Image (cartoon, rainbow, N blue to C red; front, side, top):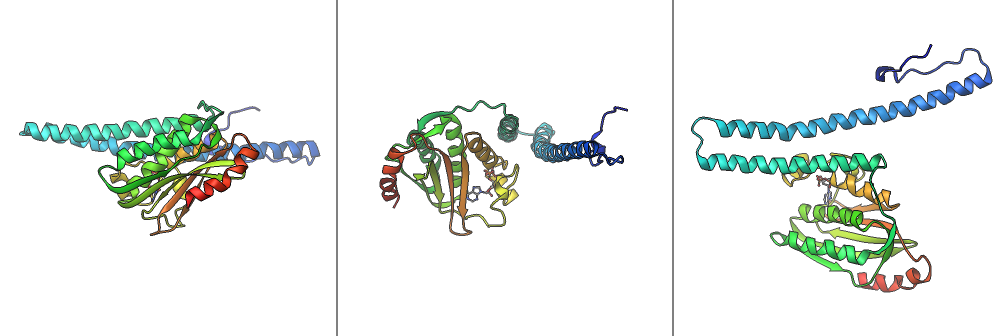
Length: 282
Ligand code: ADP
């Protein structure tokens, strides 16, 4: 008889007691399908578990602040201070919700992503300008080597988002030193490299940093305002454009994140100028 399979039964498998080949094959197909459903279900469970924990934390803070502000005898200055803290926490929570929605849409194929030729140099220059503004109040120097055009195929807005996330990480995690942005060419790909002289990332963490909510040092990162979604989004948006993110990092020796996108005008033009770009980089 047909009946619904509940989530708690997803580990059950179909048996084919008749031994008939067609039935056995059908049972195997169903079992493979069940395995995929089970895996998707576990991923969703882990995701909602993490997300609700991450959302509860700021809500708890906001509630505590609001209660504190309402205590008898609070001065106007104390209340204002409390409202300021509440506003900052709300802003952070809002950003987290927006980031989560972006990830959910992206993973469900519901995020519009353009595929058209554009110049990485322009997008990287815009992001560089933002980086210079961001670094004004810090001991970080931003340097950008973006002289030559580099045409790739993808979505300039999504690319700007990726580069912004990489750059803001580089600036936030480098308390003192240098962040540089430059263009790269390789085979049929065009890339933007964001290099910093910050703390670097231990090899044990190198793959996990792309996981949702993953932070190498939870408390320190949180103080920097990070929810641990920046690199998840960066990788997702890169992959939706048929690109990828490469990371090279050594603890104590800084990190280099490179966004690679499919190159436009495959052939002579890209090939010819590669030596010139390499010379620019050195
Ligand atoms: P967050 O919001 O915490 O910055 P991300 O997903 O952007 O989240 O990054 C995940 C973690 O990877 C960060 O918490 C940080 O520990 C590490 N990380 C990312 N970029 C850098 C970098 N340029 N230098 C050192 N550590 C980094």
